[in-house]
Image (cartoon, rainbow, N blue to C red; front, side):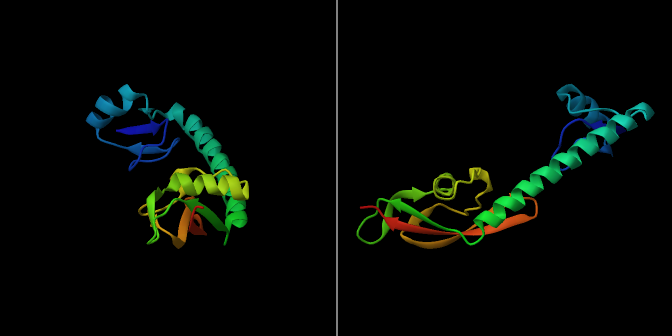
Amino acid sequence: MKILLRQDVAGLGKRGDIVDVAGGYARNFLFPEGVARVATPGVAAQATAMRRARDLREAKDRQAAETQATVLAGALLRIEARAGGAGRLFGSVSAADVAEAVRAQKGVELDRRHVALEEPIKAVGTYEVPVQLFDDVTTVLTVEVVAAG
């Protein structure tokens, strides 16, 4: 069954795409959730308009991400955290802490979900933290965690 996606669906397609799915999947999930509608010949113009709007929005978002990447490229962030005598932190430095440090020290709004920390930082030291700003726009921050006080 050919359908027009009204929203992005992971593993299926993006808004404005016309895709072929099983009839039961469309009738039981996609249509009741309002995520898709049947792709009739008259819907092609609507699909084109949705794709055009999506492409313009993605181009704008990509440009903003590239601008942020140039500002953040090679940035050194200093985060103070309470630590014990051996350099172990009381708690940890998370992606949200890194995003807050970027906002405070560089003046760039960064969503914590873009900070790709595999696990929270639990010791004093210098760390390379990748930041995924857009699908193919990434940069690396240097985060220096120091003992407070």
